[in-house]
Image (cartoon, rainbow, N blue to C red; front, side):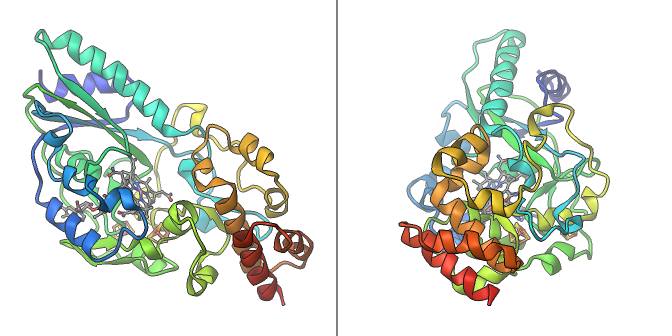
Length: 343
Ligand code: B12
Ligand code: SF4
Ligand code: SF4
């Protein structure tokens, strides 16, 4: 099969980007280990434990793998970027988490692609689907497959349609001619580095990398305990993830919106007072089927308290006092901190 045929099948399965990379180790694996050794993975153990070695070679995931079919699914909508959003009483949830959780949709699309590839191959095929959670350097292979370059913000950027993409892969035992990585088009731009509120984009690898411990995305989604006090002010109104380094990127200025309704916001920038009052059951009901549940109720209310403190509006006093009286010490401590900011 040719790369062209693979692309046509992937488009038919609902993916906007597709290409093929060789299923072999890439030079970036060394940078990955350096990244972990520098402590940049923070508390994300799944990046640093024995699974770190699995990342060294895709054949550790499927021994017979010869090629990686890399796909990209657009999730952008026409709603304004966080950098154009100025409503102090509302919370910012990052774009990728507004609608349905992408993992299931990506997997379904890749299963369809897998079936089509098997049908067309005319020979037995071994395969494996990977989406996000697999120990695979997804951006590196997507770059090798020609889907885009890796920007200074470390996101994969497509020249025509920007970086609002989820990535997924189908490892196959077929030999397919690979694509070629496109040139780096960041040039002298440094908008993402300058705009990052926590200076999380640091020098690393052949250019830049993200120190997760400083990244708002990590602090509001992955971190389980208390947010470091020195970083709380910079979190601003973010309650789940962060889009700033992509919002300011010139390659996203004319990014297209996804066709399907799945990624439309269920509620765009919900009012902080509303989400501060959610019971655990209401939290689950409001965010069921979206990525937001990953923060868990406790982490989410911790984030809401920080955002309220940063926004500093007097009407937040009463809801924060309620949170400060919570039986959960983590939520109560962050609410007390937020009340201090109001003063
Ligand atoms: C851990 C993780 C995080 C961490 C760490 C982020 C990071 N930059 O590494 C945190 C929690 C902070 C995070 C945040 C986000 N994430 Co995340 N994350 C991952 C995950 C699970 C692993 C990434 C990883 O290995 N990081 C370690 C470092 C070393 O890897 P890296 O930056 O990718 O760098 C490698 C390559 O970029 C390459 N490289 C870097 N520079 C250069 C330059 C050249 C010239 C070359 C050749 C190569 C190269 O070498 C590095 C080593 O391999 C991937 C899924 C996966 N399995 O890959 C999703 C993934 C990267 N995340 C994704 C998303 C959407 C996000 C957020 C936008 C979510 C949000 N809105 O809050 C933010 C973006 C923040 C940012 N600027 O990166 C998408 C990215 C899609 C895209 N278009 O790039 C992925 C691919 C998930 C997916 N399947 O769609 N994430
Ligand atoms: S996601 Fe936000 S905090 Fe993380 S690197 Fe980008 S701008 Fe900085
Ligand atoms: S903002 Fe500029 S430097 Fe950052 S990724 Fe986009 S083009 Fe590259």
